[in-house]
Image (cartoon, rainbow, N blue to C red; front, side, top):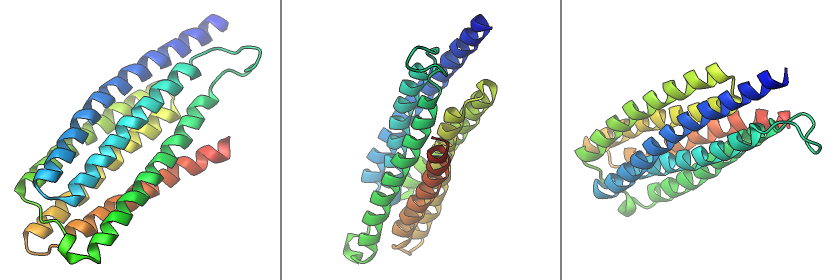
Length: 213
């Protein structure tokens, strides 16, 4: 029984490392592209989306750390194993998302009340947002498949983090397109929408994890 448990733990750790490493590479590239082109194309919504991708990169690091500790077997101080590391990481992801959401909403709201600070994005921002949707939806599907295979709530939480980034990019597309059509406030409104979605997902992940602990 012990050998099987150790083998299963090793399998979960290996699969978690693999999917997290792939996610980290994708998130690093996406965050750099969205922040750079959000700045160049003058889109606050795309900049916020880039920060969201950056938070995904931080969550990947958190998942890696938790997986390494959760894979350890029982010892004298932890007779039931180290599985609660995953629960703590899920809670951490929820808190991280909530903090990111507060910052994004605050900045976008302040711009709405200061029209001279509103940004006017171009078609380049639209193209980057479309690319982000495709990349993040693929990453969500890939991570979710692995989470089901190894039965990991932590990976499932990280998959939804990826999906939230894909959805936020869809909102960015509408905001940028509306601004280009002559409604300059829509980019800031889309940014607030991204922030609210991030906050909702953060609560959905963090509250159950806190109850479990």
